[in-house]
Length: 302
Ligand SMILES: Cc1cc2nc3c(=O)[nH]c(=O)nc-3n(C[C@H](O)[C@H](O)[C@H](O)COP(=O)(O)O)c2cc1C
Image 1 (cartoon, rainbow, N blue to C red):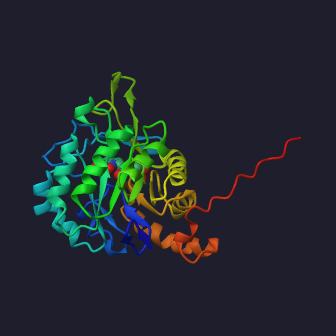
Image 2: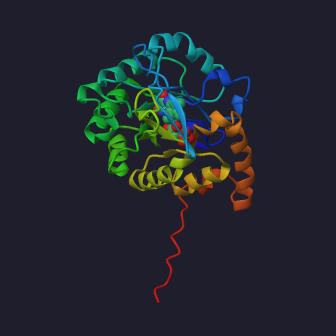
Image 3: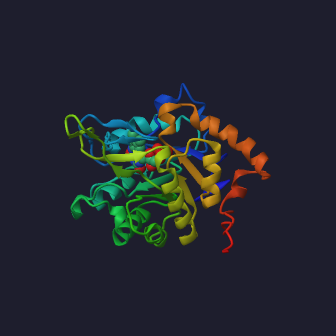
């Protein structure tokens, strides 16, 4: 199957930040459709204060804050380990300023990388910390600038914190994206009632896991109807049946994040189960499910 010009053996890949080459001894990485790195910034960042992770009902909150070795150290270290894994490598690009996205792209454009995923959910310090991904004009500036610096396929990872996912997906498509990834985590918080303090060191964090699946699924469906480029679905995927739902909603491929924290083998199980589920659903390959949502059965009025 192909997604944004990439040839994948199957539609399942890790979500950025939820997988690293240290999992290589546990997972047959060659089975995965692609690999996605943690978001890389131009400069070294240490991330947020502890606590950075806490469980919620049916999900997880994290305020990791995207620590990064910086693009030069990434290129000379981690990148080489990711490249040895086999599947097409997608490098996630971040930036706190527009220019930072361009600097990361320039530092890595000449490397053996299959594609970039531009994470426009980072707070943009030029605009008071608002995520770039909440503003269609800012998405266009970042994506067209990255587009001008590389010929590699570009996936744009969208934030769910928008009024209209269709508008931001269209801005990414207009500016030269080859696919959109829908979506990043939802902002949330937990409070310790006894101390009356936030549980996370950063106060708020990103909610992920099964709790967000219905929310992400609706966004994938809307985005897929708005753009002609492929949509990569992400949010709460735990089983092959979840993958089928995202494909039917309009996704061409999917990313699995939080499930890997509880079941490191989850992606491989999902890939195996998906092949069985396809047979049960009467399709010869998962790609035949994409965008096949049937109309609701509207109950008749009496
Ligand atoms: C601990 C953690 C770290 C993450 N780091 C990143 C990151 O660096 N870049 C990014 O685009 N998304 C990051 N994400 C978001 C995931 O890629 C994904 O969009 C989100 O977790 C929703 O998918 P899930 O419900 O399957 O986990 C992170 C998520 C978690 C839980």
